Image: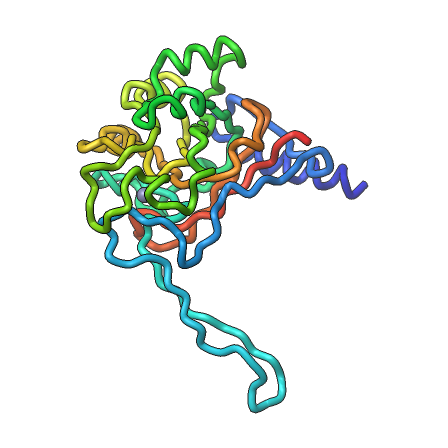
Length: 267
Ligand SMILES: [Zn+2]
């Protein structure tokens, strides 16, 4: 009964959330494994090299109070863009959604995982191409309209080694970054022809490290599509059959925010 209720409630919730109506998918918690796609926030969290600060956790109290009971609390400080986080469309496109304006239903959707880790292992500047998407669809079927598309490069295995992950660990320097990600033509195809609701990658940017013009950021931002960066554990997800929930911290009017991203994958 409990299982049935869980199935029904989540099924209803997702059907309601799927405004585009192209799909309805039930999450059966008893048949799913929940995979954490977020890195922890700590002193090792990787930020863009131009960020002057990183994640800071300041202990406020830890111990027995005068009242005789235990009490623990910290204060934290963090730039919006670092660790596992969301880029709001307005990050690179004026007058598009800020962080708190992104509709929740865009962040809870069936997801597909495109694996370019073999190409990326040979070429750290590798950018996803329309041909990669065509090959993926040849093997797995058409990407459902409105889905979340996550790109697996294998780079999360390098976390939190800044030099290995970004290609260069010189503070403030962005001229020698090398890591794989989406290519602009592929991103355009995903937006214009598959109407994706969200894209994400297990590297530091939805543009490749060598990018100077951030065209993918600009193309997805203009289309009001958010991006997820610094994901992990994508190797634990099948190409299809997963539902992803990306829940950014609700920073009002933010350009992005730290995000807890989880996936319900078939067990
Ligand atoms: Zn970002």
